[in-house]
Length: 205
Image (cartoon, rainbow, N blue to C red; front, side, top):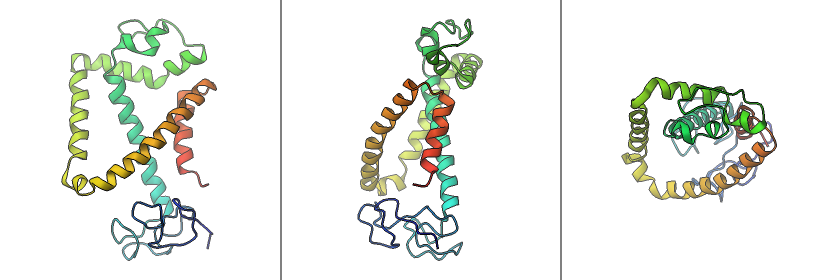
């Protein structure tokens, strides 16, 4: 058996004795052949420690779930932010790469220009142009959908726990923003930074 450790406290143990996990249950993701919660090779129902149900969750399944969630979150957040930003307030406009209608009038060459206008930015600008006046309605619809998801009964039942997790995410977010700023100043492209974000979360320590 691969010697894995709890993601929260680094203990080799399994079960309900983790001092830092929000569920007080150790969580291991270092061995994709075993359940993250109990260490069993079994699949399906029968996990005695999974706080979300009785199903065994293997590392590779968890990694895929996290990767998908992160990719969707980054994409949704970027779209919500960029779609609501007027073209004249975009960095690419201030750098003279695009004009007020979003048309490219200059080929990005410097690091700052390449970061401000890449394939993703070009796509979003095209989407804004295609949507026209409806772009605000799309942004509002995305906000309403998000609000409906986070205000359901299940969220209310775990409000206290959610508040604790939110604080952890807030602290992690500060470090995340610092890391992203450092990456940009190091000359890395947006695409490279996004890949590094995904890889760093899924990579074993």
